[in-house]
Image (cartoon, rainbow, N blue to C red; front, side, top):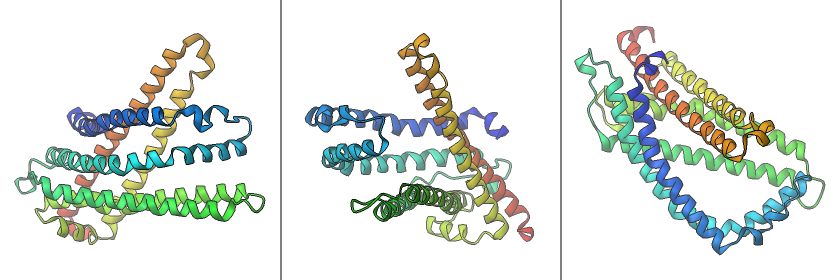
Length: 292
């Protein structure tokens, strides 16, 4: 962590390629959302009649609002999300390749990293496909929980639904943290060991129990750090609310935006820290193969 802080260029590159894709996507989404709101006015959806004092009634009203907007939103996401995913895969492949070139041990000529954009794109596409699959299975699991605990024929089991929703969400989060390192370490192996993308995926599965355990541990710890950053950002944005009359709405909007920027930059920093840890463990694996 200290080494990455001493090299702000690495953080700037990570922030740069993410925001280069994220900001245009955000503006495109806002533009398209405004077009939907013109065609489907918010007042006609029932949003203005939400009962904030009755959570159960509000949930039913939200379901009606979702049904009102489901068709245009699905049509928007049908083309916008694939475009965003393709841009994200390309930008992340180029950005990560550049960061790994800077992180590689320059003192070792055999470990110098080449620029292999197409292979990096293939590996980033595989990582994205795994993420989409994980989110889809999680969504279907939550859908099963809702179907079995909340229905129109009897009293809804809200406690059972909440328990299962929390359990499944944390379970999928943990599973993702423990398994996604396989696709995260593959680009590093491909670049440092000069192998193909498919061979790198194979090698990521045969690194040894100790080394694999360390990589999974790093992923899990940084996943927990991401949750902590999210909580910290919410606390920062909510802390001034008791003083809203004195601060004014503009100050509250500024603090809310600052908390979001804090989360995004801190999250990008920890992404670089993970890559730096992966490089260090790879170096130890290469120098002491007998111990791992």
